[in-house]
Length: 144
Length: 144
Length: 144
Length: 144
Image (cartoon, rainbow over all chains, first blue to last red; front, side, top):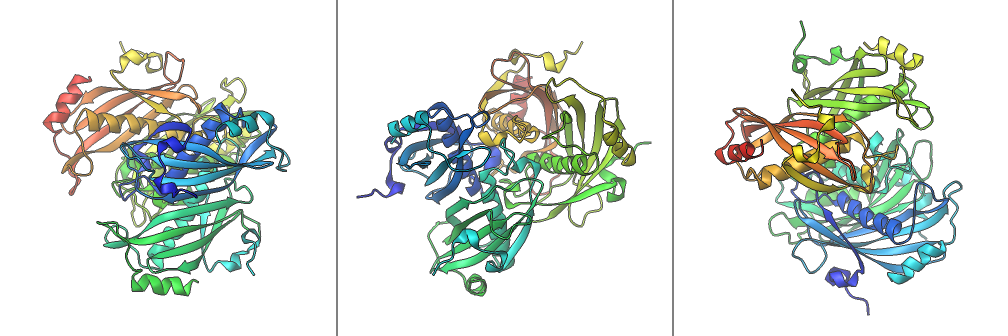
């Protein structure tokens, strides 16, 4: 039985990081603009890929590229709160990995937003998909 | 039979607008950053809602709020090209409307990205969902 | 006698471009966020450098790098207006060029903001300053 | 005798905050985009004004508005480093306050960038300039 993602807690996400909001993240309506939620998704995915999976986009010949992202908005976030982003590995394919992501506002047990981010490993020159490198695969299995 | 969205042409999207890319839209990898694709989605949805559906976020008591967005990345976009964004109404509910969106790069017949954007009309104070106002509904039916 | 920059007209700026604002450019206060004014400055400088001065940041061995920017805010700008950016070359040094920039809102004769942007040509590897290349210098003299 | 601002240390700036860079802050050239330096300036100014000077842009009848900002770029900053922003009050006028700002990269004693940010207090309705409120003035004197 699948849990409603909007009811998940921080404990469901083994990899987490703090993201201080910036004044300019808020839009005319006084809340963090929807587009910025993806900036926070990117922050946690990029840090995880660099620190845990050993990815270096500048030098690696085979590197991950986003093919699909999705976000469901459950509650607003607002500057100046600090957002906590959580990530877990949801699916490991041959070339692709799917991260489940949640963003938690200060003082909330359940997420303001949930979604996913799918990376496919490609050859940086040809853009052809490639098997997930061994070091990255080990990291994904650890955070499943 | 559903067409593969990545094979659709501009003609599949009755509402279109041009979006000039900005230097800062490109990221370290030399292409428009994934997050910015949602900035372009927002541009076409906001303009459509204001111009065609009569929405005014600042003064309206009932106004649309994003509840889900999704983007599939088929091909890179890059500054300095001008992107053409296309929108059609995919589904009209009681309170919600789903827009199908595609982004076309210069000189390409098929989209660099496709996705959707779901708006729910809410009471700006209580955030409770509300039926789609009549003027907006007429616009959605026209661009189905 | 120097004119008050806030009283200048579009005619004082021989190079101009249109910049459509984006919803997300506005901040919580309902106007284009101050930081975004520099995004518009960058837009006109980068386009001028690429189209008129022949600069290619990706391949050139000697390329311009910002060393100082300044903006004075005279009046707000707001989405959904289209901003007109004007540029003229104010000073040509041995390695550096200073652009005077103005941003005009729709229906206004005088600028919403004025400022400058100083580029220094450097060796992309060593970051040592270099004389302005001949093609670029010719363009700067033309737009003085 | 005035010190060269690019030679100042963190100690010259009594108010400081940490700003984690984000992947999308870097531009095509692999460094934090020039425009983003102003996003960091804004971060430290806004936090100082809210926490120390008691400013609330949403509810206050008299609130500060940027009239001039300037940045000199001494050295690049790059994701994923955490930037330390320093602020001191440089000049207190009748209606306006000038903040000197510096941005320090990780492991550097001298700033990557220095500049200023001038706020003028205005009536939020009429936009006419107003004397600095007493609470704010006390904070500015403290951080001179």
